[in-house]
Structures are given as C-alpha cells and as structure tokens.
Image (cartoon, rainbow over all chains, first blue to last red; front, side, top):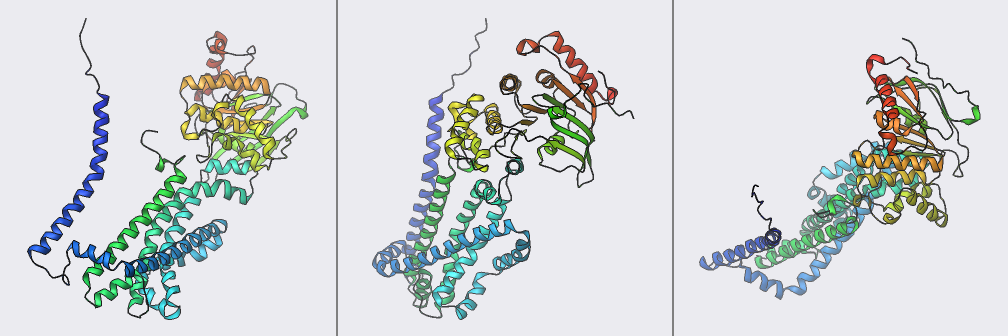
Length: 278
Length: 271
C-alpha cells in the first residue's frame, strides 16, 4: 500500500493571506501619502523655502482652517455649479440618446454636432460663452458641455447593446415601442448609463473649474477656481494649495458617490457589481 | 435531383393543421440561400423535430414560423385558434440560449409575455405560479438568472414560453448547450409536459438521439439550403421514459435517422 499523502490544504492560511492582502491594499496608498507629506515638509524646512514660493503642508492645513469661511463658501458655489451642470448633462444626454434611438434620421443629423461640441476644447469656448451669457449661466453651460457627451455616447451604446434574441422575443409578444423601451432597452442600457454618469460627474467639476478660471479675470466670480486664480495674483500660495486640495477632495467624493449609487443599483444582477465568489 | 417527398402519408383534415409551409424559401441579404423550398405540415398536438447539420436553415425555418423573419417566397400559415391573448400570441418560443433578462427575477422574467399583453397582475400571478410549478421551479421565483444553473435557466425560459398557454411551442435547440445528464432530465420533463398539455411542439435539434427520443415525427434536412431529405415516424409505445433510451427499437430508429443524415444518403427518402 502506498503511503502517499496530499499535503493538508490550509484553509486558514489562505484566509489570512486574503485578509493581509486587503489590509495592504488600504495601507499602501496611505503610507505613500504620509511619506510624501513628510518629505514635502522636510524639504521646505531644510531649504528654508518661503511660503510664497512653496508652503509646507502645515501651512496649507493652517490656511484651510483659517480661511474656511471663505473657502467653504467658494466650495459650495463650485459644487452647486457642478451639480447643475451634471444634472443638465445627465438629463440632456439620456434624453438625446433616447431620441436618437427612436429616430435614425435625428441621430444622423445631430450626432456630428454633439461630437464637435465634445472635441472643441471647453477652455476655448468659455470666454465666448461669458460674452453672451450671464456669468453664472455660462459657467453651468461649460459644466454641461463637458459632461453631456459621455452620457450621450454611453447611453447610445447601451441602447444598441440589447440582446438580439430578447429583442426578437419582445417582437414576438407584440411589444409596443414604449414597452420595448421601458422593459428592455432602458434596463439593458442602465450599466452603460451609470458608467457615463460616473465619467460625467468628474467632468462637470472640470468644466465648472475651467469656466470659473476663464471668468476669473473678468471679475465677480466666487467659486473655488476663482479663489485659486485670485490667490495666484496675490501670491497667496498656501490658499491656492488649500483650494486645490478641496477641489480634488470634491472630485473624489463625487466619483465615490456615483460609483456607490451605481453599485447599489446593479449589485443584484450585473457582472461589474458582483463579487469574485459568485 | 429527386425532390424528396415531404407530404405526410396521413390524410389530413385541413382544420387539424396548425402550421403549414408551402414552397417557403429564405435568402439573406448577403445572398446566402438559407432555406428551401420547404413544404411542411404540422398537426395539432404533434411533436415534430427538425434535424439537420449546423447551418442547414432549421433555425431559420423556426424563426419564419414564429414571424420573427419574413420568408423570401412561399406561404406560411399558422393557426391562431384557442388563444385568449389574441393573434400573434399563440406561439411560445424557446431560444438556444435561455435569453432571460438579467436584471429581472425569475418571476418577472416569466411575467414578461403577460405584461406585454397587458394582463392584469392578479390574473398573471396565478399563471406565473402555475408555469413555474410546471417546470419545477416554484421555489425559485425570486432568484435572479445569474444565481441559477444552465438547466434551471432553460426551465425558466420554458416557463416563460408556457405562461401564455400557447398553441404552438417552437424550440430552437433549447438543450444544445447543456450537459448530457441535465439534457436527459429536461428531455423527460419536456415529454411529461407535452403529454399533459398536448401542445404542438416543433423542436429543432442537431442530435439524432434527442430527436428520436422526443418526437412523433423526425424531419431530416439537407445541408444549406435546407430542404427535407427524409421523414420518419417514430411509432414507439407511449409513454416513453428512460427504458426507451436503451431499447433496441430506439437504437434502430437512431440508426435509420443517422443513415439519412449522412451526405451519401441525403435526398433519398428511406421510409
């Protein structure tokens, strides 16, 4: 009789490895952040760099706290611009994609212009818009222009990605256009739409910032990007950094929120939202 | 070329015909002649298999009968009697893939044909429960398609076809992607359902064994463009069950049908 034995598979060990990996995935970027901030602080101190050249991280945080009343008001302005632009982009993009889906004729006539709107740099359009529109409107329009296209193209792609056999089944059972749209095309397009919205959220913020900067030299802005431009003129470098920090945190929060909503909506059925196990 | 005889040897009462194809051909836009000319009569309550090599146009024939595609020439008549859902709804179709909506639960997937036919929910719920019970999935109404095995998804697809209580059940290689054990079980369940519900079934397959096991009539088709090469009546004693699979009678039928399928013998009617 042979006494060959398979080595006992240690399930515990595998579980520990798994947990370790997860901790590393969270810890590693935090370590990188801590080390970079430490280095930044060290370089500023050792070389005795003046705050108007490069403020240390402590100075930036101090400014963030001291200037919070001003900065928070500006943050709110930029965020509401972003939100308005984003909602307009979401509604406009989805509605237009639905129209294109119902009428090829409309799609062929209008789609090229949607592309043109997308490929023309928004920074070049902004000054023109600022001439013709009230400043607040112009800023929202900029946020809309950059957020609009990803929603439109993703929704269009989604509406065209319907399973052909399912579409055949709907025809077989005599589905009306509206029924096909509501019960088949929109649910099938949902993952694509949500993907488009996720891109549009970040882009709307960029559009808002770009327009604020373009408007900045023209005067009466009060958003975060305007603060950055203004602080630049005044050599208030710590405040520039603080505003920048707020912008990038805002961007991350927007992305995180949209990703979370998307996960909530898709978690029961879509591959992208399922764990590895199932 | 001797045109194979496709006329049934039974003298039919025309009212008994559920599906009737006369000189039907299909040429795709690409110029490929996929089918025909094809003549086919199917009687009420009959279980007919279309058997042929891949790409012989048997699925095309099924889609034409369903009205999913239009024939290039010829006449297709499908009886719509006895369906309360109105014309066009008396056909249940089962695709090769389960073709379920991944975003909807099993119950909502089965509900689909009723919802599209605007049936009130109170009436629909009972029908859905009944259809799910018929395929043995009563306990899985709230599951999502991704949580089911391949065989179970196919059962949902079958329940969705049965829920409208169709006159005709069209099945396009429904079990081709399943493992043999699952397929055998589904074959038996399908036969049991057919015996109790007495639907007309037109079943497309490329498996000789499956077609002989299930059908009253096996129609062997030639390679593209698909025509009828031979027709077999499988007159085995009912009800068929697992014992039939291992019987000499079954083996004999399978041999004959396989024979007709080999290119050498194609175009010649054996029986």
